[in-house]
Length: 295
Image (cartoon, rainbow, N blue to C red; front, side, top):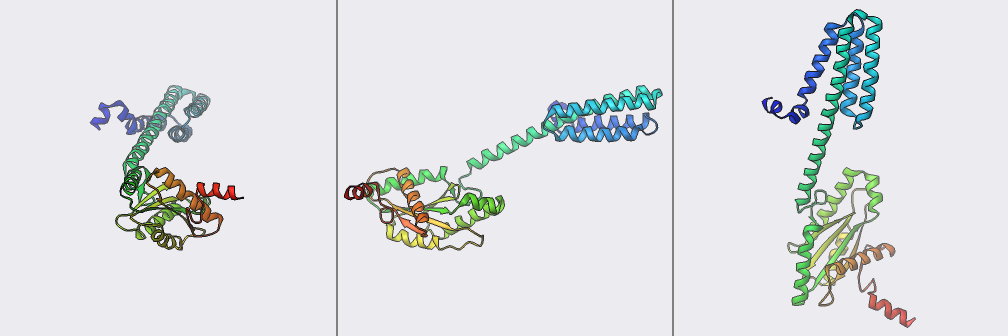
């Protein structure tokens, strides 16, 4: 209480000022006005209070308050002219309540916006995606680059699996946000269970996962791809397509490897196959040029 009184913003945001103004206006209406006027005034006060707090548009709250206050003033002068002073005091209380309620509603919405912003900042700092339960790409990309550099330096095999939830946009719309998040968690768990300790699982977003398999040639990766693509989800219309891309040269970037995995996953969808391998089922650019020249 003392802290709220010391800080005017906190005094408004805590609702203490609104409670005091509302209580004072209610007391004027109940104890100072005769007849039916207190009931009309309390109804008007409730309408002004709820609308001013709830509406994000301040102009509509001010217009409603002006209308209600005018009706209250006219009713007082027409029905009980002897209580004009008390009626005008009640009208002033309605206007004051509307103003304080609008400030309170604005403060509440501002606090909610700040709270959501804080949650987003904290969520961005977390390395693990909240829904998928695996590394976010922003954190996993550094590990992917490190493993690719190691594969180039020492000539070790390295294979990427691009795992895509088929028709993700449609699936998400059909299932809704909560069940769609459960699908992501399910796929994340499938990839974790299908990988080793040294493997890295990352979520790219939009129903796309990446599984990096260090020291694994394409034949070993095919075994993992077949296991992952064979997963049967308990949710309807949830199917996985897998694109396999292996490092076959001593240079190249992680973006190129990701693109190859994406191309292989797209080809798997076009061929209605659970998975395809880039360079085998999906011709490389050089192979495409050679085939075009032969034609």
